[in-house]
Length: 391
Image 1 (cartoon, rainbow, N blue to C red):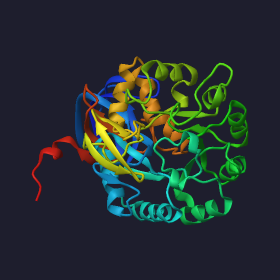
Image 2 (image 1 turned 30 degrees about the vertical axis):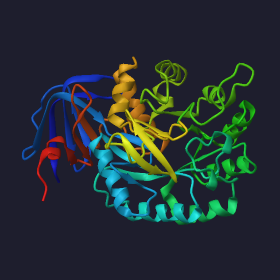
Image 3 (image 1 turned 180 degrees about the vertical axis):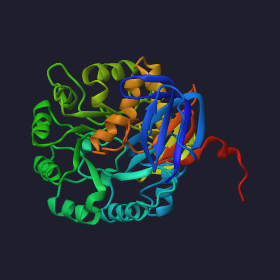
């Protein structure tokens, strides 16, 4: 049994930041937390954190691609490359996220994800997030309208049979014909039902929440806006304690005041930081193909040629830094990046630094850059390795 002692780290727990603490890891799990440097068991591997910040591994419930790879491109290599990119940015678990497509393309993506699960080269795949295809044309955003369709129970049964337990989240527009029935069906199957790309009214959203929808995908984006006589999806979600909200904190998709308002309304237990990243994450400006569209990334902002925002290029560690810079306290921001998404997905042993939890932890420097990422007690990414020659 491998025993690891992490020393000289600022530990971000749920309730406090231990300034010069230590952690004992045994057989891939955290077994003890100390506020000093203890005497570790004989033979322990000692890792010195040099006073840097240790946070629980972040969980991204919404990511499409990274480093030039799109998880819908039909290859397992793309899934693995996103897994490695996630680990390099402090994310230790993620949902492989689809875009609206033909059924065959979605089924192929599901097959590839399932093939990689259990042998990831970086972050662990917690499951699949199907963003569509049951979305509203009026709020489609960058989703390809050629593949948008109304909820189809028979089709969803095919998807569920192919995905089995790997399908964890589905984003739909519940106001579409058959939408409410689909919410009930998915909720009954144990799937997290999320609302977005939706023109649902306040009343329709409330009915969807009553039937089991419990999550909002990229809140404020791709949905009916708030109006004082037509409050829409967002206000309905604000009123529901059980409904959590995704936030893309890239200083593009949400104004800082909106992020702070979401935080005041929901608290850290109701906000989930996401990337919603496309394959441009990690590569920078340029032209890309995503979801059947040509996407231009300029100054880090991804748009279709008509100006529509097309996902983001933000990473989880950048989203965490941005959130703190907007005035949200560090521990609460960490909960939004790690604990809350873990809870939304029912990942009982992840998202927190506490005895009994998986040793999925990330060491960050003062600028929130990732020094190393550990999953299950194994370091799967280390910053120094980026500069080493290959071949």
